[in-house]
Image 1 (cartoon, helix red, strand yellow):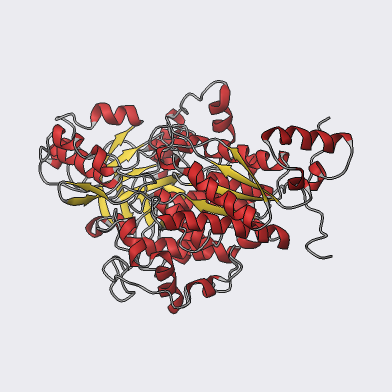
Image 2 (image 1 turned 180 degrees about the vertical axis):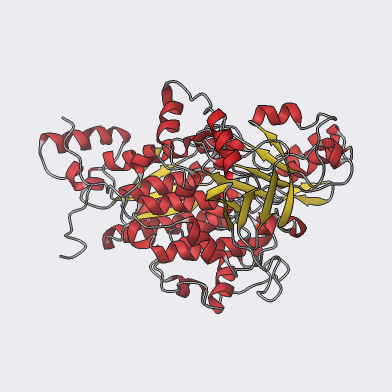
Length: 575
């Protein structure tokens, strides 16, 4: 059957001359929509996370208009709809608490409405995985368009990076190297244009994952939000989604195991966020693609970090784009056989075709493979009696001298205990100590907040200490840095060994050996477990559902009942 004659999903709403078709068309026409828009042409949903409470996505209405232009040009009918927006900088207790909820909003909005294909407008950290998770479960033709990073931050003659310099300046204030007035003076200069964090934080990492997975257009990762080429990309995505609908190319045909393996290796090369581990596992499992921590560790080994961006390096996303962007990085990986070059992408070409002869205009920003920022850049997965189901560390952002370390634990039972205790001048802590934070995981916080990069005690900062080994069941911002072990599974609130650590216990970290061990006997741990009680769980409301049904970090922190693909189908009539 030809593409022109194939009956699209939206025809079940808008096609025919019966009562239901009359209702669906008539109420839509109150927006001034001409009759011929209901003639069987592809209906393209534009799923928008625009919100003024999500600063990184506050410009997405303008991008949506350019997507619509492209859809119209290709003969489609665009319909924009809102979904829950997740603003990392404003939402409490953490935006991660609502990622799965937003994904449900996306999935059911797609399933319930007359949509043949969807363009996902994403930007801030959790909006990208939330929309991809929801779209994956619905399994329609899909393209993701990221909003793009802000322009480089500027302050007193230097480039400053989103988040990265917040952590740095805050520690400078604690150490007495910077005044509060100087600190506050950097606020506007850090965020001086529309867009998301311009460091290689989670937003830029996930925009890069979109491109590496092939679910976004080439150059999606790095074009600045205010660069006119971002609008051109949006318009081209609008054209292309119509073609995907006509060809019936669904998201599951793009997001294959090969695509995820490509993305994992790209994450190592760019020095990407540890949060990508959780998100890619969750997205993959929505599609029935098996992806695990072992895959992350296996594929990350031997991948050097060649992108010299904060927080691991010194440049920013604007520099990255001008240097050649993600295509240049992937071309370098492809040269040594690290990518599945036959993976299909949404522009109709293979990954290999997209990156063929991609230029590198600045080898200071995008380094060569023989001159990497970090020789081993892939996320390292640690295991041992303290993390039997795994924990992660980002080697490119860690201190090499601390990657093999043995020290006494200084324990914080929760984030309130940490803040109450960390700057106590009598706290028994030194540079060799291992800071341990409990009850900040998926169930414990709840939502697994970005508090794993615990600020160092003021008295040590004043002594010139700049990093310490830190261990928790929490996450950390992709803009952060340090020798920080994260995502310990099982978490403390689920009864993991982390819950049993006490002040003074010896902990051994061996990143090269992939080990994380609590040097306490099994017998002693058994005695401590008898005395342990889980923290009080939320009562009622969404947080109660979250705590009851969320999976652990090694499984991507999705809800157990959302794993797997359900496809959109055609629902029964509403009237």
